[in-house]
Length: 367
Image (cartoon, rainbow, N blue to C red; front, side, top):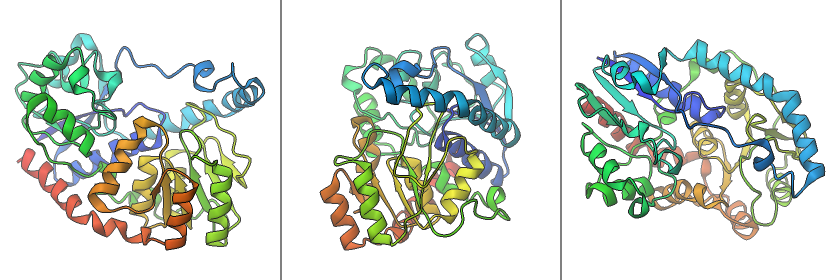
């Protein structure tokens, strides 16, 4: 079967490109011919640096971040574009003008994973396969996320409901998105694992030694500090692990960050560098969903936190469905998590059944 994947393959984001690669590779392992649909929405744009880094409120720090962006972002863009062009089997460029014709060459098209059904996509509806009512193949969703369920307040809710009804099979990544689909269609769809859990990535990391000497705490932070401050959190983790070496990874292109508590910061790590850093880390501290996924995959002890509302649903889903006790919101909960020494290494075993069910969902959808 010839399959097209429609997702955020173009984003300067480790989780986004690696989940796309994982889904591509897993589908190929099932014997399918797979392409990543080379489509970028017209209204896609990265936040302006001025807005993203609060220069108006913290001018000195803003200038420092601007310096980091000027120095490192071109290298980061180059490393991501190199990974995408060499590792993803991209289709020819697809635009709104030829969207329907381009997708009709596939026997099935899969939309997902990541936040392809989030608020920023509720206007053009391309990831719901808008203007493809006459598509001859199978429309499938695999692990999309809506971030926040506002189904009852969406202006185009009726249009989205119709588009969802035309899918051959539907699945979502978390409970919040399951509720989103139910509010629109009254259909309860299965929750499946993120694509990164379907594939082991050994083809990308085998034979590569650690790029950091000795044991280290890996910090991968995308949003605001934990309540109480990341500096204090890192000190607690250092005392808990007995490790002083703290390695930070920053997405410099999107939102440069300055971590004074880090021993070393990687400002332009490639996707493969990022994988290797997780592979050899002794402990992980993150507010990233995919930071959690790769901690699980590598069986690393970790603590994750959330602060912003649009990040909360993904973590609460893991906590409620699988009993993750190392998901925290403030310093009190962090201390409790560390003192109880929750077995974060083996959380992957708790979700193994869901991983197998997710593989079965894809096999049945493509049978």
